[in-house]
Structures are given as C-alpha cells and as structure tokens.
Length: 243
Image (cartoon, rainbow, N blue to C red; front, side):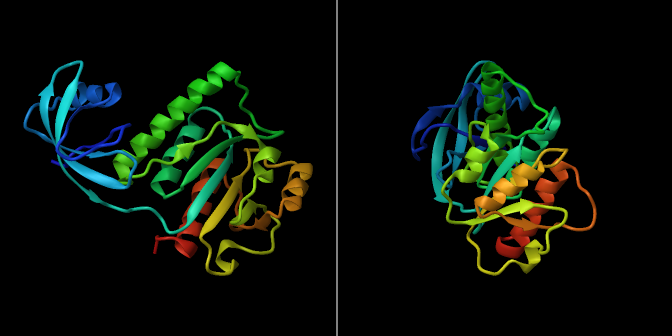
C-alpha cells in the first residue's frame, strides 16, 4: 500500500510530535481509517518530506511522531504564473488541479469582459479557500512539496500591468509563432488564458501594450480548460522538465 502524503500547514521539525490539521485528521482517521503504528509522509511547503508514524488516532484528532526529514525538490526549472480568466462550475477547479500537477508555480484567477462568473465578495472568498484546498490535494497526489498559491481574483488589466521580468504570453488563434519557436532559455513565464468566448479586441490590444507575445497552439479551437493545460504542457516540454 502506498504511504499517504499529507500536507501540514505549519513548520515541521523532526523528532517532534504534532497534531494533524482538522482536514488531514478527518482524511487519515475517518476516510483512510488509519491507526497507531502506521506510516505517513508529511510535507509543509518547505520542499522537504518527512517520515512520520501515527501515535494516536480517533474520529476527531490524529497525532503523529515525526521521525526524519529530507529535501525532495520536484519543482520545475521554469516558473509559470498562470493568469486564468475564471470559468464556470467545475472547469476552474479542474484547471487548478491539473495545472498544479503539471508544475505551475502561481495561479491568479481573473475577471475579463466575457468572464461568465459573477460572484460577490463573500462567495469569492469561499471559492478562493476551496481552490487552495484543491491545490493542496493536487500536491499530495502528484508529489510536489511546495504548494502553489492561489492569489485573490483581480481584473485582467491590473494583472497584465504587474511588473514581471519573465516572458509574457497570450494565446491568439491568428498568432504567427508557437511555443516551440520561442527562443531559449526561459526561466519565468506569465501565461494568460482567456474565457470561453475569448478576449475582446480591446483586451487583446491591451495585452500588446503590456508587452505580451501572441502565440498559437495549433489549428484547432480548444476550450479554455484544455487551452491552459495544453499550453502549460508545451511550456514544460520546451523550457521545463517534461520530456
């Protein structure tokens, strides 16, 4: 049986006994039904992994003894900041989960003119918490030991205007170059993915003013969640650690 990987929100030190978070304790104690003596692997976002053994488990709490830790760097050599115009329903959750599995370093949800998501501040805050939990679960599953941040949602132009020394890319169906033609090396990418209906002409012109490069993925029109994952994969093959 594979040893479960569990994220711990606080700094972990070998040789200490710690209580798992409420969500982690529920998963370990209720869902997996694990008990004293069984092994866990913990990570705290410091790019280390820790071997631990359960010393107490019931329906409400789980305590573990941290045995040892070691550096385990599985981060991509290219830092990808995904700016994703928010999509409806489970599509946004799917994009966040899979982009993190593919090695994205940072995600910012965006509002654009054709964004189909309308949320008040309270619902948006709850969504952000939910998305961050999805990010943690994705790291637990794929083996990453740093958890990418899901930033608060912001306006498209405000995101484009942020200072960034990396390559800025915008997907465009009439672009003249592809990811494979971009010059090497690249260490940082700011990747913009628009909504289902695409960016407006004014928004595309705005991205050009902020030095975004238009790129083409191929001859077919992709859905927004497919576009994000295809572009990230191509970037990782070109500049990162997918081969």
